[in-house]
Length: 270
Image (cartoon, rainbow, N blue to C red):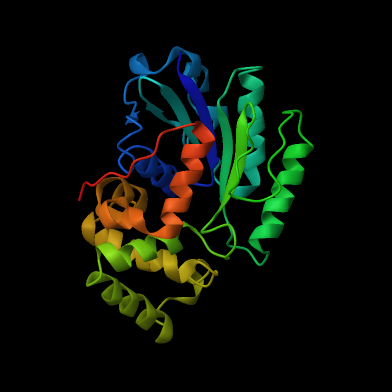
């Protein structure tokens, strides 16, 4: 019987980030992306919406998780499309699969607000306590309760600093793309410094993580013109080879391994 895991993250970038760490970045896990519904473990098929349009909205993306499977594990990674939906998404899934024997249930979120990582985690933990799930997250972010089920939450980038996934990608870029990174930074910084961005388009770049997101986006569009950042995370070397030795990235990978009871062995692929 497989071990089952479920992780809720904020957005599609986070989904691909976890996918790379669980599969391509961990050769011992044996996990592979599930492409066909016919290949999906029957126990998790309930998580695949069977009606379109979703909730009657033709413009709304159907919220299908990314599924990973091996001979020993079946894991779903679900985008909540924003931090306010994280606990609700987890609660919906636990209710849908009532008393299902999950090995691990977890949440991953950014620390990109004015609040500290500790406060964000504390608020999340209290919200989980108030639900009907019966879960008790550990006192500290990044820790995993022994369960069953194992549970916990990781606050990016490192459970302590304020920031986002992009902070980790910038550390990766300094190793993997050392020559391109300063060019991308100069491009973005010049546009901001010279006030070249129209005022009605400055809302996102002026956010705390806006500059970092723009730098990563500038690099990603060179690798895959016209493609989204999550595609670059999947296809390019952000989370390969030496990048997997970066302490903050290793910490996320270890959290996922602990949460889902996985062996961990870094991939050497380039």
